[in-house]
Length: 273
Length: 273
Image (cartoon, rainbow over all chains, first blue to last red; front, top):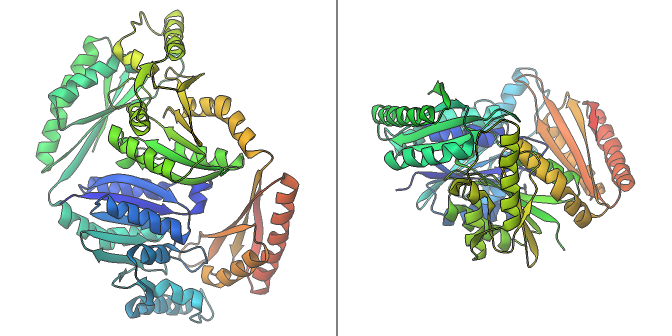
């Protein structure tokens, strides 16, 4: 079964360039480190039809997981669950356990003196209205629960857009699930700082190393200022165990370093994770 | 004619979470400020079929502009132009003017002492191979030219992924085009810092102001720490001229401030652009 994920970031603030999409990067990094493959990150506006369409398209692309980020809160433009329900052709209904989670949060806020009273207004109940068949995920930081829906060959996960809430739900509820799916698969990466040689001169050397090391992904990132060519060369691999991953990377690292030095370039190891 | 844009960011480094997508945000902000509407930002891996599929999907969604970012350089994984050619069902061919641009860059590098010699290797010629019917855009900073292709109802623009090169080509070659399409349309935004009232209590107030101010988009962003509710409320509008935009925002700003203060919240104006 494929281990691919699509991340759908919902929010007009991202499309007008107000907010930098750090959530997308964080999720991509965590999912990759856990051995899964992020195939797309899509940002769409917080509009029911747009969200629904994007989810339907992601389902057609046979992803194992689809994670939405944002749009679970109490305001009018928090429409992600409506979008999911529309995509799956089901209804939104108050989920008793989700409602209990929301209620308990407000009791806690009153107890802590953050609020005087907390009526369960329609805006607050909204956060407990989930698509049929969905389960709420405990939000250890904020009010709106995360949501998980298992469908035929995929799992749909909805996380809130507040970074601390998204991260906490991911670590508590999603990491164990990803580990189970990925097994022992490990992602391993390292970077070289290359100076004294230009990107188009490095290009054939990369080709050669990629050819000799079929499981290694090499990518050059030009970093140079106007007069000094400088390239960051990133090497990464995903392997069934971490020893195999490290061995593969080492072999490619030695080969590319030698080739670059022969051409007059200088090489420095930047970092190893 | 619609003024919508999709931004397609090509690069595996974005999907493994190595690189934060600041290019996407920068383009979204600039395009919005120029009066256009960014409908999606999509990140895909640097793979010909993936790029081609994403472009075809974006064309089906009737966008006026599609901008790709990344994948124009000399290395094996710079495949964006291949992806575009595949999406449009055309060939890549050496474009004489593009080749001249690339050659002149290398002559310049030699003259400046950055390179000793610069053979036109296949890796360098690659940067001048454009889809049939495309025109190169001068790259004032780096080597690979940008690319523009006008098709029936849309314009496809390919920019390099190095931020300084992307920005320079955008400012020189794309801004005049966007201004022509958008006319006098202006985007205007401002933000309020709200304390002493929670997001679910602000939600019905936002609804009321949105109802009374149909052209204003209000969006609340919870910023609070554990015990102190704090919300950034962002107001924005796109109008035919800047005076109309400012007047609209002012009206909504006064109304929402009053409503929040009546409910015991505090309001501070954050910024106005």
